[in-house]
Length: 421
Image 1 (cartoon, rainbow, N blue to C red):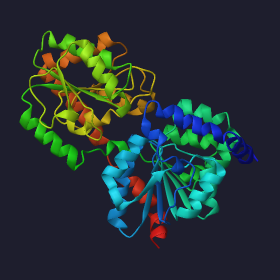
Image 2 (image 1 turned 120 degrees about the horizontal axis):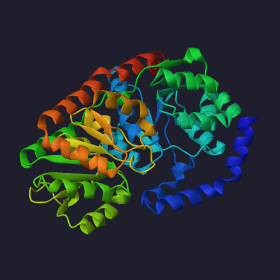
Image 3 (image 1 turned 135 degrees about the horizontal axis):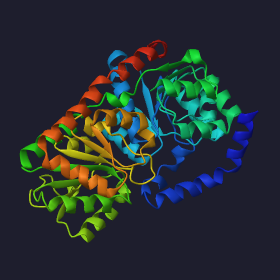
Image 4 (image 1 turned 180 degrees about the horizontal axis):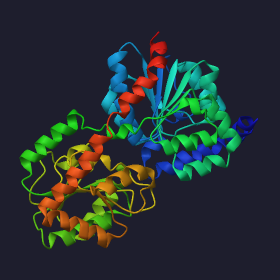
């Protein structure tokens, strides 16, 4: 009954979904393209496996699983869906025609029913917490094995799901396997109605991190061409650019040779970041206009997608954005994997467990204010031994927690074997 009420409300509100896409397209024009996919109207082929990753971070984690799946089951055909244009670009650039790719339709019942009827997957892997009642209902109606991989459920999300307890419980009971990151999150899923026998704590795939071939090649090129110390402000958002530039200007007072590579999280923010750099008075160039990055500027604007790990590979320190503003933060493991000190702002709740582990060893520092970040940044360039110690501690946390992708693949093996049938 709860799902019927939910479905009816979504059907009535369907016109507002077009308004939503139009609104999002004001910042990112890509949201106004391929709208037919959002409503399940694209013609698709049947595939054995469906993988869904809502955005870029989840897609990167899914790639780790897909590597193992392709190695053991090369015959499996795959549909790989997402919800954001940045994730779509990443999937297309990384996988090309190796998978069938489209946006996952909105959870309007007729949209997902049409989508599932065409794709008819035998198994579905949903990354992290992208759980939709109608999607799961239609998958199970069509005999699909549904698994949640790399699942996470923050306390905030837990309370939001609790508000719709009957709908949530009915949905979770239909999920065949929940592979989640921590014991705490297992308890949260069980408290929402998931079967305890189906919930398993496996760690986070995001610890199994390494640069791809393009990123590794970029690091090699940069090391050969840039003869100066570097720090990276990665995945930064509007509202954080000025703080990063202010910190860099302060650093340059005593460390005049240090270079900042400023990498916005989303393409729609590239122009705003550029304007903020110009207003700061710092000399700069953009990654998009030069392949060989020069040594005579203060800032490089990383206005490219999929290259951040390559930039982290040459850094002596890193700030991970989305955390000075109330956005939830982004993955601090990306710089930590290279053995460099990491800093985040106070709003890092989407990566709370990871931040706490890194912070406890000294490999990461949470800086609640820009002034505290400036002090932390300067300390890394004034004391090489301290910087190296912090970086080593960060890298050890990554190494200690690796192996989640293998654990989750092993748990998925029976369903994948059946799908490969």
